[in-house]
Amino acid sequence: MWIPTQDEAVEMFARHFEALHRAGAAAKAKQQAEILIRGGDYSGHRIWTKVAERIKHRRKESKAA
Image (cartoon, rainbow, N blue to C red; front, side, top):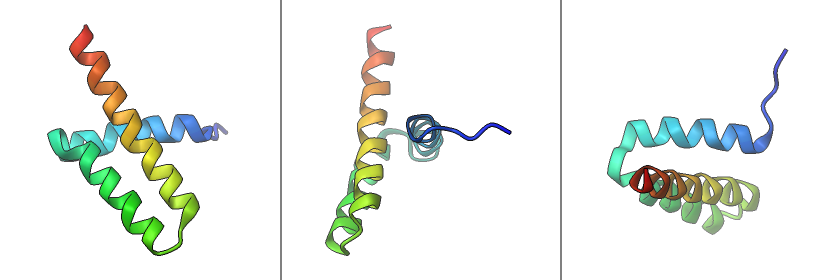
């Protein structure tokens, strides 16, 4: 059985989230991170921040290609 690493999971979720929210995906992910940090969920904040950054990185990669 394959169990994804955290980085693989972030990548998969970033792709899915971007497909759902298109141009607003990175902003929505960052917004979710902020909601979580205000509620004291530091690990959730860290993951959603990684998702937002991965979406931004994917966009830069697609523009460069």
